[in-house]
Image 1 (cartoon, helix red, strand yellow):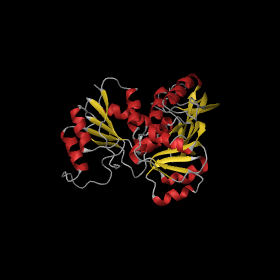
Image 2: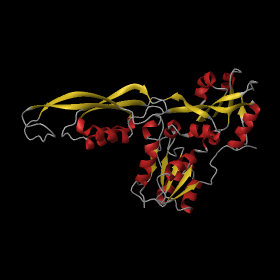
Image 3: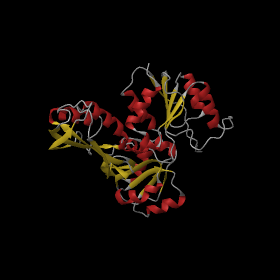
Image 4: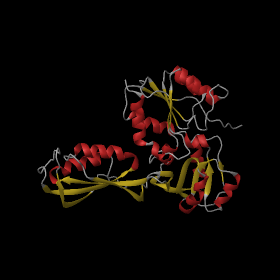
Length: 364
């Protein structure tokens, strides 16, 4: 049986905690990483009903989009649903893991899933976040350059847009003198040695730093490895909030709004005044994303998001159609993302979709 820590490793490989916003609280919130997994329950929110569902389905870990522990807790007396849920989870040895803004900024996260549901093409990120790239530079003897380069690239370095296995290699000469008690790969103790070497360099996302360094050192033949890590001004263009894409054919605004209602199972849909234009370019962002209205206006015909305030609808100014589909509704398919990630790696335990509708908003 797999342990919870093995599941977490898979989740964080796709959407590392370094992707989350500074104010967020992603990761393991309740539970022991050493526990073996019985089954997994996927949900948008964690409520007491969801904990009961996990108990009934023998699920000892819940993967949720929204963190149940968000504001600071000063007591656990069961005075509200959050505290009762946590207490019940602890009593029943149920772990709770949250993937929130790290799932939002993840390249194929919440907004990407929205775009996918709408069959958008040429999908790009609206607002790139501060996830800066790093570069590794290492000096390798010619005899081992293929092995070392492969270790670096196979560990996740070398991705640039739609390309992978990217590196740059320069021939040169390295010099060194092995001191007493050294065990040089080539050369003799006390003598200056010159070796034909290749300078290998490649970029990588920050969260892979330790993994790449360890893999590189393991593959390198030298006792002491000379390498550098640089932080670049360049950002990873795939990491960020919101997505924009295109429909295969332009369609009428009302037709598109009806399409939204159908795909996202909407009981209610708020929108700004119709512009009279066809919809071709569509911007989407799961959750509360009114801060992206101006950027969406410059690039899209419609912006689909949630939690738009009264005065924010005026920002459309007949240049953009704004559609507020609801917070829960925009993020409901986060469970599908969890399933896609987990099911590719594990087949020895059951994965359940929560049947509890945790949307706190109801419509008459």
